[in-house]
Image (cartoon, rainbow, N blue to C red):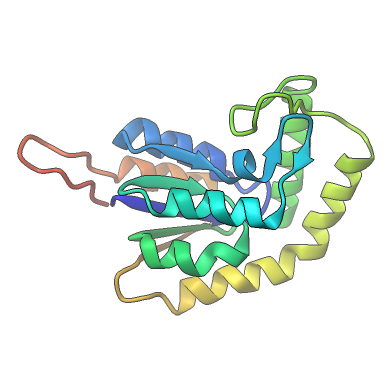
Length: 182
């Protein structure tokens, strides 16, 4: 494992898993939300997001969590590991609400500075986005999972206990061996 692609819907636990894997493996972690947003919840243009995701993809090692599906083909081509957090939408909605409460008025670690959690019209729009895209997003990720490139190790995790077991199953490099294995 040198380039790990973590995907899933909002609230599925992508950022948490990325941090856990980063802590365990020492691989650098990149969050799509830091590419998607600028200070003050200003969305970058698609061209900027494409360019910045390409810069991450071209690195030798990474854990990259998040969406921006137009760049999935390039990310899959560069990744050696694909992790799909396929968590029920009810759980995801609860997690999104809980993190908004927990971090209210503060910026979460996976967001750029100046993007504090809040409750407003955008929060409602985000919840509606989650509901509206749950099937189409799941279909895109299911296609990658069900038809992986030969070079790609694929994992579909559906619960917190599966995520914990996956992280515990990672073996980190020993002297003379530079590979991370599951």
